[in-house]
Length: 235
Image 1 (cartoon, rainbow, N blue to C red):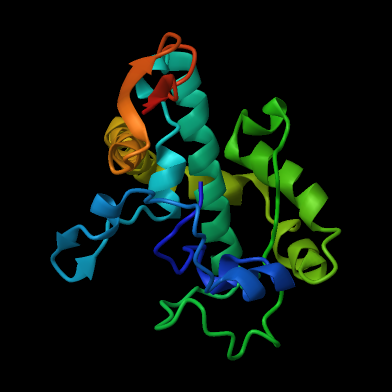
Image 2: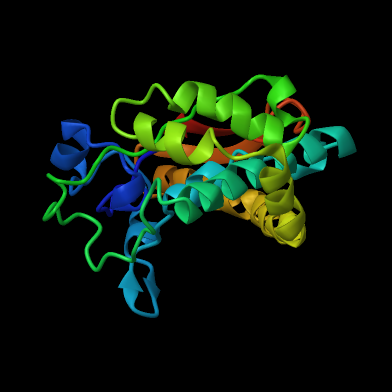
């Protein structure tokens, strides 16, 4: 789902791909994006007109926390903790710079000299047995990066398991904080999903060609959180 009231929300520039398509579409407004209804488009709130959902809210909308079990949750939070902690290591060892807070997310000034972000991708399940195992698996892939590979080999591959274990122990408290924040974000998913569904239902109500419209579930929520259908009957 895209944004109608734009401009489109992306990651911080330093974490964003340098693909030219993002530069071309970064300031675009998708006429078919959210919100669809005029009521949501003209909704007045403090400091803004129109209801907007940024990229984080739209991603959280597909979360289904009521389907989370203990084992799945532990694995989910461990992956995010190791990923965040690895970014801390990369920053401390001088592999990547500390991202600032840009005044304009869509200003391309200075992007020419900015190196591309490190993209790790997914790792095998065996990489999450410990933080040291995660770093070893990550460096095997990232050491081949054409822009950051040399720094990875010099500053990360040379770290001992004891150093990595100290990182994990020192920041263990942050794992709980990260888990709490992710849980709170996930529990807001139903609110975001309800806003999206209500907007589409309202869109149908605003058209004279629609005689009647309603929302109903088409399958169980446990299968997918997006289990609602917006139905309209032509006049």
